[in-house]
Amino acid sequence: MSDKLWNSEYLKVMTSNFLLFFAFYLLTPLLPIYLDQQFSANKDIIGLALSGYVVATLLIRPFSGFVVDSFNRKTVLMFCFFFFFLCFAGYIGAGTLLMFAIVRTFHGIPFGATTVANSTVAIDTLPSARRNEGVGYYGLSNNLAMAIAPSAGIYIYGATNNFALLFWISLILALAGFIVTTTVRLPRRAPVAGKPKLSMDHFFLGRAWLMAINISLFGLCWGIMSNYVAIYGRESLGITDGTGIFFAILSGGLILSRLLGVPQLRKGKIVENCLRGVLLSTLGFGLFAGAWGQWSFYLSALLVGLGNGQMYPAFLNMFLNVARHDQRGTANSSILISWDLGMGLGILLGGLIAEYSGYAAAFRIVAVTQAAGALLFAVATRSFYLRRKL
Image (cartoon, rainbow, N blue to C red; front, side):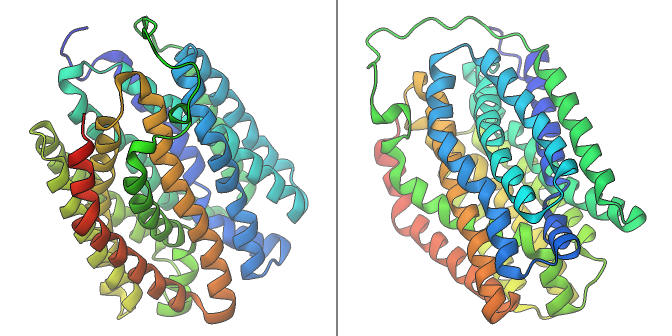
């Protein structure tokens, strides 16, 4: 394989990843509003209905890493992506709250499997000498989608007041992503001699357990923010039409941070990047919880974007660096399991806390949790990684 970073197969996988996340997160900030308006669901029921997909995602992640490491990765990716696409049709047909909750929960299965398969395939398309920076740039595709898609969804809904249109758009985008995956060509993988037939490391990377706990705390904060920012802004700050701007600023921070951080990853400054990102995110979530006005609301979006844009790719490289080369799928699934566990708890706890104490209280807990995660990384996780790096 040549040392060319931006090869055609890598670009295809980045494109399919962008479409996957764009289709999924086009709906994310609007689903609490949809459940409220369409089914008159209260806050804790909304949290329960929306957290189901994360539970399903968590259950499938460990097996996804094993399957991706054991079978033809392109075949696995195409199979998972196709079922991810089909699930969007379920939202269109769900006529009751229970049916919607079931569809949303089942959607977590192909979402969890596809994200593991896609990111592992991306690593396979990279030359080994460019892997650190390639992993950093790859994350731009889902970061960009996760930041822009909610803004686009909010804009489309504001202009049309039509949730069905949004479901159809997501369905079409997911189909486009599946079509792109069918064109990807991968180098043949030779079987690894002496690889154990079955062990826990096929399902979760035990060597990274403390890193997993750490990033779960950050995932919890992201889960509450990304799902409840629209309602929080409206109830705490009276911002009725600024959520799109919030996600646009968040997007700018994520993109800028990735572009500035990748050269540092290329030099091997993974721990330094991660610490800087964690501290920026902590400041951002603190401003967000303070609710001092629109300026703190929008500035927090920039700081969280800048922080997460450096923190997450650094963490991903850390997981990959403590894993053997034949455990790439397991390393990918392990960080995603950890992140999703945090996100799922965040979505569920956010709804419960908001029901009894309000959204302001929920986001004060977010700020404290983020600060605890930052302290854990500075005191223990970074030295834990350096001792176990292969």
